[in-house]
Amino acid sequence: MSQATLIDGKATAARVCGRIGEFVAILSGRKPGLAVVLVGEDPASQVYVRNKKRSTEEVGMFSIEHKLPAETSETDLLALVQQLNADSSVDGILVQLPLPKHLNSNLVVNTIDPGKDVDGFHVVNAGKLAVGDPTALVPCTPFGCLVLLRDLGKSLSGQEAVVVGRSNIVGKPMAALLLSQSCTVTIAHSRTKNLAATCRGADILVAAVGRSEMIPGGWVKPGATVIDVGINRIETESGKTQLVGDVHFDSAVQVAGAITPVPGGVGPMTIAMLLQNTLRTFCIREGVAEPEPTLLGVPC
Ligand code: GUN
Image (cartoon, rainbow, N blue to C red; front, side, top):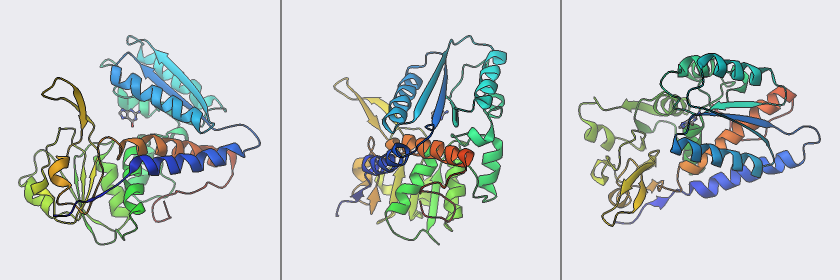
């Protein structure tokens, strides 16, 4: 069996970031500003926040970082969010999740000005996406997955899409985006009765469950497009840590038509789309035309 086309998320992300950087470079006034708030010392979150800051600065945007101790009170965190809402140099606000257990994530996220909600997690943006409102700010990971799918150049209309995972961050918005592209969409999850058969029916299979290599090649329809959102750390027999997806890559690559590798597939797109969302909120706030990609029917 021939091998699938590898979907190069790193290259696509570099292209998106390159375009953003060119746009930012010729701005005559202030630069777009992204504020990232990190509470506590979760090691994975620290890495994500560091990467976001570096990428923000690489495209010429203004990066503001707030690192708060794990024991920060909800009152203090909400006050910081409100201060950032009122700060005219801030176009995007991102509160890194997960938050320590004593903090109410929903309350914190829904305190962010929806017009600065570059994660697209605020109920106003989630609701807009659900009803197909083109002014929605769309969560970065599913947005990135859609850009990769559109980039393949094949029409998505009428395709059978199966999203495995029902999180508010990936699964649900991914399903809404695929629906906006006229796919026939199924959301599968841990309670789905015949997950293997459901996956085998997919022309487009998006895996977002957070379980290492749980989808084997035998669940992939020959020629299907496989988008693997999982980033799982496993220990190899030699004791080294390795990143793997939610799909068993070595078997799936034999069957799929196109597949994202881990790392180098969806991962780099998440930050690229965060910067795209920040550029978008900047353009709306400044009243200037936004460069592509945009969404919901418009090229992306
Ligand atoms: N934690 C893991 N992924 C994300 C993300 O996309 N945004 C935020 N804010 N936190 C996360």
